[in-house]
Structure formats: C-alpha cells, structure tokens
Length: 138
Image 1 (tube, helix red, strand yellow):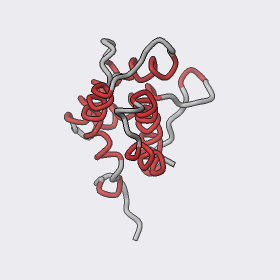
Image 2: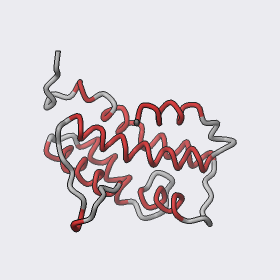
Image 3: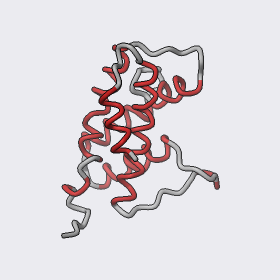
Image 4: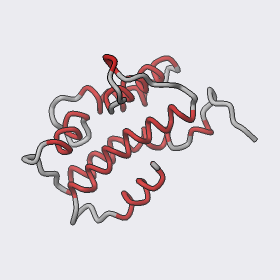
C-alpha cells in the first residue's frame, strides 16, 4: 500500500493541494514505518491495550531501533519528528493537527519543509533489503 501512496504523493501538485499532500505525507510516514517493521518481522504492539498502532508508537520504536544500532543520524531525524512540539511542519504534532483540526491550513512551503525533514528516514525505510540486520531472501 505504501508504494501506491508514494506514487500518489509524487503526483500531487502540492502547490495546488498542500493540505492533501501534507496529509498523505503523514499517512505515508506511518504506513512506511509499519511496512518497514513488517519487513523486519518486528511486531509493534498498540499502546495501553489499544486496538491500533499509531504514528507516535512507530516513531518511538524506530528511534529505539536506531539507538540500538548506533545510527545517531536517523535517531535524531525520527526524534525531531516525534518530539518537536513547536508545530513545525514536519513534527508529529503538526502532522496530527492538520489531519484532525479544520482550522490549521498547510502552505506549499510547509509541505516542502516536511518532506526535507523526513527524506532521510524515507530513504532508509524504503530500502529494507540493504539493512545488515535483515536477512535477504534469494
């Protein structure tokens, strides 16, 4: 599914549809991380006995994994997204707010800034076969 989301994301004119692009970027981040963990055969449990795994939870798990593997760069990228409460366009707080609050409107520049902040994480999770801790199948 995340591959179809990426195709749609690449096709959206974010200057014309910044909210749609930003919302899909948030979904792509969450789904991409979930697909990455599925590929790595790591089960992520919902928090507090809930039914669903949300963006914050997969970001926390990714940060833990990056810290364990001593990948400080990606740990910092994911932490910046998860922990930033200043409503920067790439922060989970802002991503969730634009998804759920009708009074917050995204600009094209904010879409660009969000993508730029997330791109290193996407480059990593979208190429899971290149990870040393994942066994590749022939």
